[in-house]
Amino acid sequence: MKLYVLNGPNLNMLGIREPSIYGKQDFNALIQYIKDVCAREDIEVECFQSNHEGVLVDIIQSALGKADGIVINPAAYTHTSVAILDALKAVALPAVEVHLSDVSQRENFRHISYPAMACIAQIKGKGFQGYEEAILLLKEHLKEQA
Ligand code: DQA
Image 1: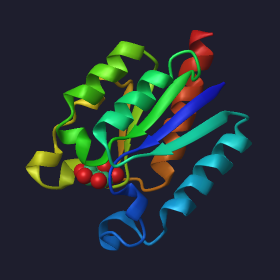
Image 2: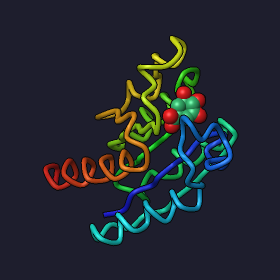
Image 3: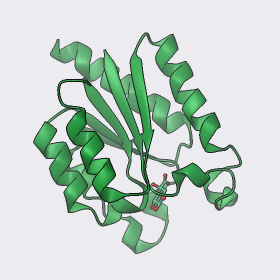
Image 4: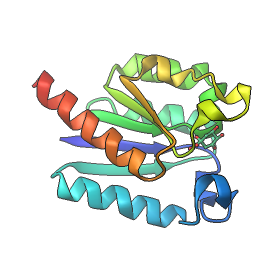
């Protein structure tokens, strides 16, 4: 089982960026956390981060034939990107959307998610643990489908 984990714009600034919302741990700590979860669960993982919408679309497209599922935190593109929604629909791989913060408790513009319309679940407000939940959810989903 292989997963792609994608992180969108400004998530590379974790630890520096609004720590009261996103926590004090940096992006490398997040990647290590994801790799540890996947190693424990016997899942192969590739992690990506980009600040560019088109690059995220390219990575989603490249998952076809290489990954069994996608965990994605599209960050700010969550609230604007039909292109990321369409890319997820195009590859039709099971995907779970993650947000470190609880977007439903923040500004109104953060309440809408385009990519979530192509995801089997959205996990929000659980910090790093949300990524673990997303990985476990995909693992269960893929096992049921096998
Ligand atoms: C975020 C929430 C988004 O609204 C925001 O633009 C981000 C991070 C989160 O993980 O909580 O960059 O996706």
